[in-house]
Length: 276
Image 1 (tube, rainbow, N blue to C red):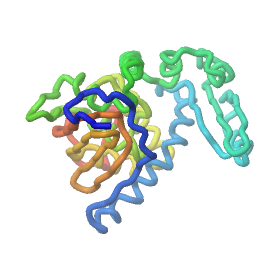
Image 2: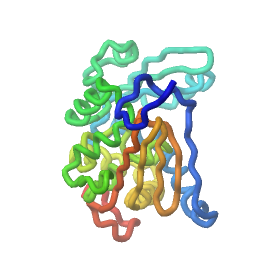
Image 3: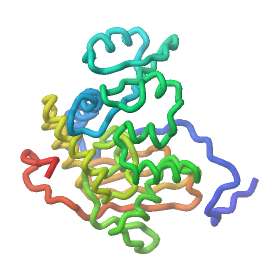
């Protein structure tokens, strides 16, 4: 079959094996970033669970996939205030956790009897972001980096590239493939203030569980100007410290997004006020 490289839309979807890899540009750089970013990823699950009982965090529900052999111990360690539903498989168990004031019970969420918009709402996703992502999915986009860049007010198109001049660094999603992200959803814009509020509350909880240094390191990493390109189902990501390759949508022509500016003044990252 002859492929026309000028086409914007493919005739068929690309079916690529799972790709997720990254490399540090120098060993010294790896030594600086590996431990704090690994600590950040390790803390994400604890932070998400803690958010269920936090008065200021918008999250009301959390879905976790855990090894079946460990599921009972994991549930036993949870607060009695958290409601739990589970679906057990031989190897893995799906847990759905809800806060005491969640409008839906965990069994209903586990069975999928709640609309996708409401599911995202209970996860704390702002309405604007939930609506935008629903539209992205309806148009076949699962990794809508390009669409979000186009919806960001400060984005300019230069030489065929989308340059985001004034994003919120805490909403930089380009390294979310590695878990280096303060939100577990796609914002409607890289300047969405409501999504930033979610991310800021998440940063605060990292401090409360004793992983403040990891959160500050992740924040500093996300402020670095970042390049993303998508082509033939693969995303190429890089900043001055790291490069990575990951799966993305089936772009049949190269799309490029550059995060250039900083919305926040970083200053001394040890004194970052995530709620400022």
